[in-house]
Image 1 (cartoon, protein in one colour):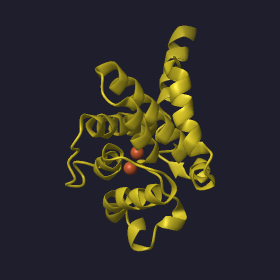
Image 2: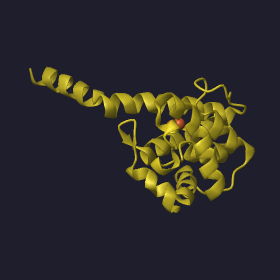
Image 3: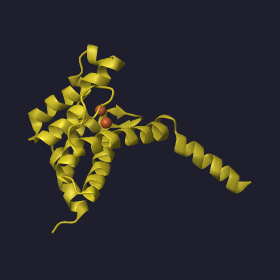
Image 4: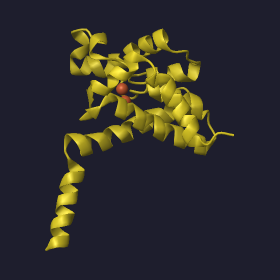
Length: 163
Ligand SMILES: [Fe+2]
Ligand SMILES: [Fe+2]
């Protein structure tokens, strides 16, 4: 039987083998790149759903696709911040449909991950897990990459240690 790391790696590889998906590596997202963001959300969702006894494969696969869109997929209207927040789950779903097979849980994960900004409430436990993991990771990335919080904290601590 495969260990968790290999199972997660197999899921990740399926997506990483697609050219359009690899493009996410070159797109800024919360101060880091979108592929790293997706990987963090998918890993966290995989671990939590496995621990709680849910469908961790669908949970991780849905998370891998939740922000699957590139700059080329956004029209002028979508780039406006409020529109972007509400529209990008539909754009990601459209891309996911073109490139991958999905079950109903995975579809729901993609379309509901922006709840409560959108009114699309998560229907499954797996969708709720991704919705929450996405917020936690988003806050972490904002503090770390947008504000450089960890570096500020490390600096303060190092000054304290040195003095
Ligand atoms: Fe998103
Ligand atoms: Fe996200």
